[in-house]
Image 1 (cartoon, rainbow, N blue to C red):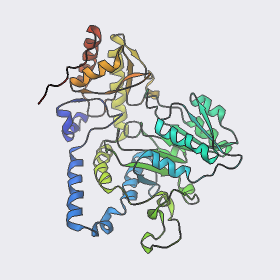
Image 2 (image 1 turned 30 degrees about the vertical axis):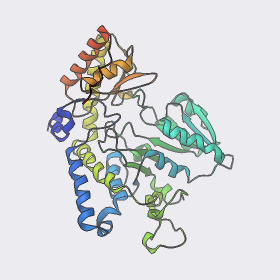
Image 3 (image 1 turned 60 degrees about the vertical axis):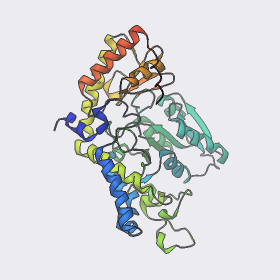
Image 4 (image 1 turned 180 degrees about the vertical axis):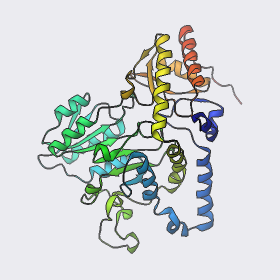
Length: 383
């Protein structure tokens, strides 16, 4: 099946050139059907729905994500967002001994950086590094946690994470891999990498929508760590309503309270498509199309920020242009959907459903707008 044949499964593609899956993947039509199924189940089954699948969804849906990221069954669970998932990880550790350093890079996504910085109140020493080479140098026997990004959100650069993982394990530190900007377009095998924890979400390349983040915990760690950010889903017998905490086995002990059931219904529609196609095939097409797009931008004389080497380039292409905020607004007015980030410029994110013609059209529009000077779209009139 040709990849562009999947376009019919995403209604918004009929009206837009959708180049923003690095920020919010388009909604599959099936997601709307599954949300209706959720509403019907709630309406017709009521309280019985918990025992008929709802309660188990954080682990059953987690297992589907696990298949995509190379994780064994029972090692991945679902949360509301990555910040919560990383907060659960942090709650497993104290920062009152010699090993209390958190070493991370300044290009980590702000939300998780804020969370890590907040651990200073618990005694953590925060060490911020400019890049992955500096992280390797900074890791020592005082290091407890190393939160890193698989793909940098601003530039789409795939990091060389293997040396970081190797160095961290050499000194007894734990690695938390944020794969949000990778999974669904860049292959990931958490087992082969040997990461201790991995986190990500469904909003972007997985086309799963908000409210469905995932947390992978290496199985041997899950058997012995005890998170303190915990809720009744993490109890060994939650419906016994015991007064004292008894941790569930495996990754289930990393759950919290009542799950976000509608988000999990919606998310699986995107996961199904990603599994059907296969991330390797998506990656092959992504490398080809991003190279094609970079060539078009080069011909026009634009400053491409994303890596030229395909092995270091994620799914998006970032380009600097003058007045990029205004250029962005004019492109959006033409139904060419993308975004921008301060300091780097416009971000274009083709996915498996993008046609070559759409990329050519986006590049031509960018050239035309930039050559004559971008103009803010006229405001809509009343009524």
